Image (cartoon, rainbow, N blue to C red; front, top):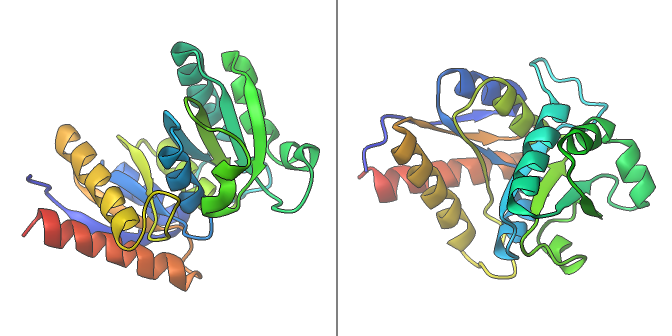
Length: 222
């Protein structure tokens, strides 16, 4: 499959720049946002999104209310509920909801029903609630912000990926799944791909994003 470019970058600002270039953007936040969402897909979620929490202030534009509205609209169209994933990891649902009021407002505008509010704990998250047939939004301070920034900047598609194992994927399988999703979407849209390490200060994100980038280049472009 012909993919014109495959690039690697970091942070919400890198995600926004890739979006403005018209690339499919793949957000990698291993601990834990993108791992949580990979596990959600394994558990049968029909779609996954990232969004910024209320306190986020990246150097690029974000719009978590619009993410909430888009996800909520899809949920209503599909007759599905919405599962919110938020922080703190240790705390109450009320504490988590208090930090993502913009996302919640978008969901309310769409008329979507919140089925559960869960902590952002990676592969274990789906053990807390059955995500089958639901839309999942991870409103988190790093991966969620980068996802939000890419959407706001006009990316044709924003995906997530991880190298961490989930209940259904082990070894290189999670990374291969991320690479395959990115290539399929970029091929259908006739765009390039940019893989984004959600935090330039996170070695695990950088190494994971580099690994996924290499997989795309070696397995699909060679």
